[in-house]
View 1 (cartoon, rainbow, N blue to C red):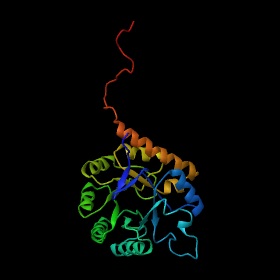
View 2: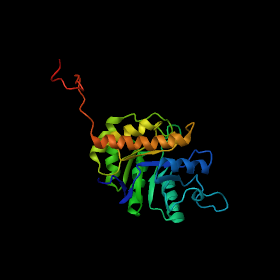
View 3: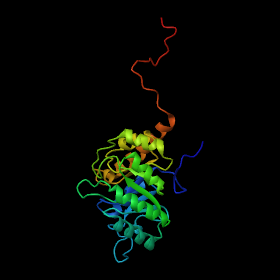
View 4: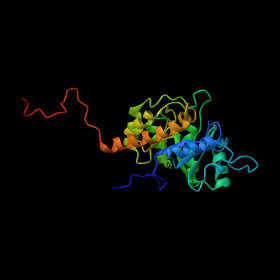
Length: 257
């Protein structure tokens, strides 16, 4: 059977679930949830998580960067200047070139500022970064991000931390059909079935943080998302039946007495 790996910037991953490292009660809880999720990539907010001050607890003490791929992100950045500075710092600290770009537009809705995001993507790509880009679910903007060098498109399902699930399946499908880049749903998922739906739409993966970290039982939810992603991927690859308004009996109609 052909292996079904997630490939990002030529690197292969068995798991299609990416998880964040924020909002947990402590690093120990975070590490256990990540292990249960089966994720091989974790996002790390460079401005918020300690990855360099050895006088304080380091994330690396709990999550081994030799076993898990660290994906530095620019959470909390509202301008291109801040985002560029943050990722250049990450490259200096850990040598990371595969990064997640996130440039927010306002503190209330936490929607991405796509003008600043597009500008930052182009600059980072020219500097040799492999940029996974958090963005709106706008197909035109997604295409522009691809054209300026993004290595993965990461549209939101809904506002960050909202737990609303995918609000615009049509746009996600359009983006899916027009791009050959990895398509990762990022932000807004609230439960495992949201991940399943994302995968059934043809997405290559999902990124989740709040839905796991703030669940009543983060460990059970981590497992649920792991299984939800697997179920959705298998469902997508299997091919759904056509929808019809007419009934169709499951049992043979020939030879009925």
